[in-house]
Length: 246
Image 1 (cartoon, one colour):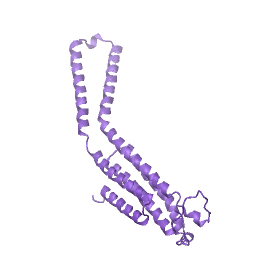
Image 2 (spheres, rainbow, N blue to C red):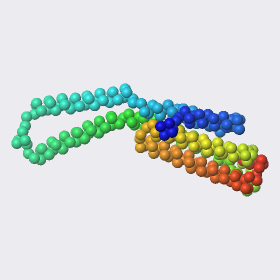
Image 3 (cartoon, rainbow, N blue to C red):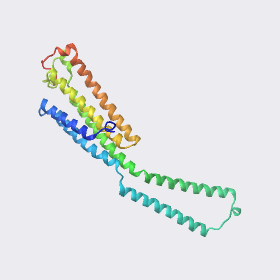
Image 4 (cartoon, one colour):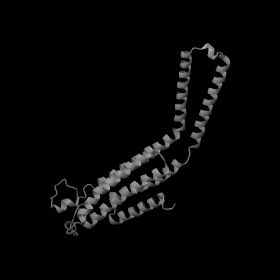
């Protein structure tokens, strides 16, 4: 069982280690601050995921109390109706009987919908919490992607001259490789944080959102790996310690 479930503490520990590595390699960089934010989101996700497994006792008690009152009210109405209304099947025509049955069926359907709404109330509350956290993870994944957008080794390989508005390019090829690698690690860990909700809360909507986050992080990582492939090519290796991209 130890290797069948993701452990939030291990994910947080990996993120903390990644942040230290980023700060040591690139002191004061904004990528390190992003990693710190992702670590905080991981801690919040751990707390939220644990809460999703716990019942909201007060809400459940209130819902079942309302359902009990509703049933009691229906029983009381039926008893009162059966005592006050005296009729027999012989005194009612078939069309009138159909109308009575139809009205009773409609009332039962409405009552059933109300009961289902109350029973699923807790799940909807938990779903909103999970989706809110997943939305934050989706947003921070795009922030990680923003940090690597200008880190393009192709500019250097193609000998494209910088303009006055070009981004600063101060990293060596080796530093650029580590920077991009840190981005891919962070994106992968964001996907793992999202997966915590899928294993803690069995809900199709939440599972779909988790899959979206995982597909997003995998897609963004693929773009970064294309840049790393360029760096690892013979042309990229020839850059050596020349300034690449910052």
